[in-house]
Length: 388
Image (cartoon, rainbow, N blue to C red; front, side, top):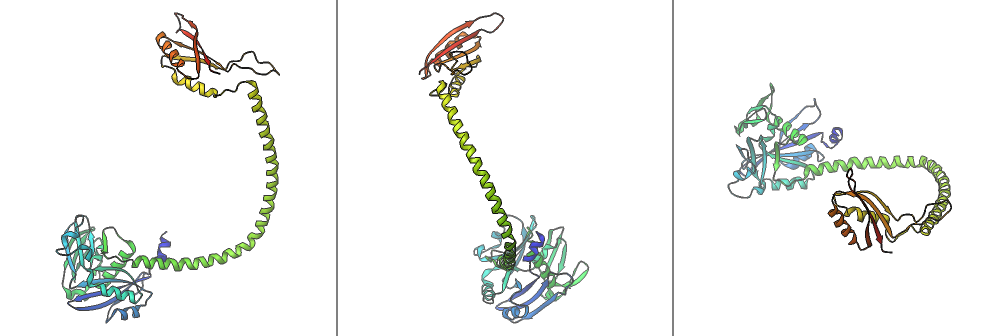
């Protein structure tokens, strides 16, 4: 999955630094390369965005970082919707926020969207891939341990914000110490923005509030190009496979014709078995065992009415009228049911007999036997007469 994700990641990211000073704007741009051991292109000054895109190329991926007049930087206690505390006047939907929230302190850089609307339109007109917007140096917090004293005073320890405030603007071009090596401040910001773009850390957000789908558009275009080539290759491969598949398909047809012939024989046998079932069903009907209700119906009706103090031992539904003999028709009495059981309580037995009489299909209920033995529970026999 990681190898596939690398296909959609750009080989480099061009960071456009927009510095606002009153009505003036200063443009600088640098390119951070994904591959290791490649030289970082230092930030250069440009007169226009068109000049930047012409220099780096329209197919490159761009990120806009805004700083200067109108860009505010604050640190405040972390809490849900902390953005509301930062907006004195206006709606927070009119602002773009970049922030790092360590769940104790939130370091925030934000500005009005109106400051860059014309700039965003220029990106669209130039048909360049703008994939993100940020402000200040918030991206530096992707480094869990950090101490920078330049344009910004930034300190982080074990992923926690120690300090965050605006520093000396003259320090923007100074070298800063990072991991024992002096590097340019803009290089460090460019590297951090690229890492945020790739890793999408939970605690760090760049450009919240800006409805912008540049990153997703870029990824979709990469996928379209990749799968377009893949589909073309796949079609050519499918045509080659189809040639060899024809022979296998003909063999398969012959095999299926053989199976069809066998299937026809099986269907004939099934028809014969169906006729046998019909013949035996007629034989059962002729025996007289068939009734307007299934035997299971009577068993279920009687069984569900048995009180807990009565124990059934035997039930004979539709008893034989005479013993079964070979080559003789089986005859049963479809109007009688015999029940044998035991109970210690005569009253319960009487009540149950009354309940049985209440069934609409019962013509009569007779107690035909009741045996009392001091050593055993009293036994009883009941005969139910069923309406024909």
